[in-house]
Length: 332
Image (cartoon, rainbow, N blue to C red):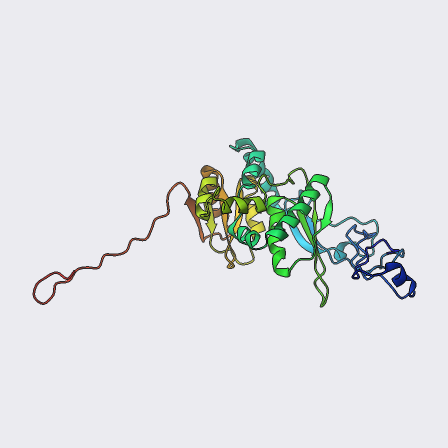
């Protein structure tokens, strides 16, 4: 198209179509960078004219100065009408000071280096991702190629249109296994589609040692066990089971509380009730994290420490007490 977008109509005589009149207009999204905030313009194509001065509805994270705490906001709250103004910061607090101290202690006493932990983490995928990839393997392979390009080229890409139910799995894969930033646009108004962009984050961003699609194939071939518990027990020495989060709390709060254990555990959601498993590579660090959570005062009362070196106890069936019949014989 003259505007630079690709024509989305079915195969046709394009030159004749364009000559039919000036009414043939492009209906694609603009996708140029906005002037005030560098997010993509989500308005319909407006040729060479400037992007409309409308609020940007991209979701963003607003950090404190030390980057420990953040809140989720909508971009237009901080950029609307200000060309030179930078994003506002939230204030640091006592948690930030405590986090700084914990991070220094963890760095001094960590038993395993961070790079090794990330390599280990790439070799584990939760059952929800394995089930998803088994059912939608072609989609996963396509997404993996896009995510790899983002990592290799240190760039930003928009994910292709996918079913709404698939989005949470793709975002989980991008954030937890490639360590990419994810930003979602739109979807707040009727008829407006959601757009998801993935961003290169920093030097921690990486392509997993074993891709999810490869992991699924290894299970099918019998190279990896089909038993999820067996796979988990071989990789992790211990897990903390958080049965129920305190009211108003989230997984991000747990990660902030355990900032000194960064990259030493993998989080896995339990069903749909809001609980989590924190899988630790080292049992001694798991024990320390467990004590920290119990003594944090954050209300983590429903938590258990699971040692994967000890087999789970099976419930034994109670033996039925034998009774004597009327003639004095024991019933069998």
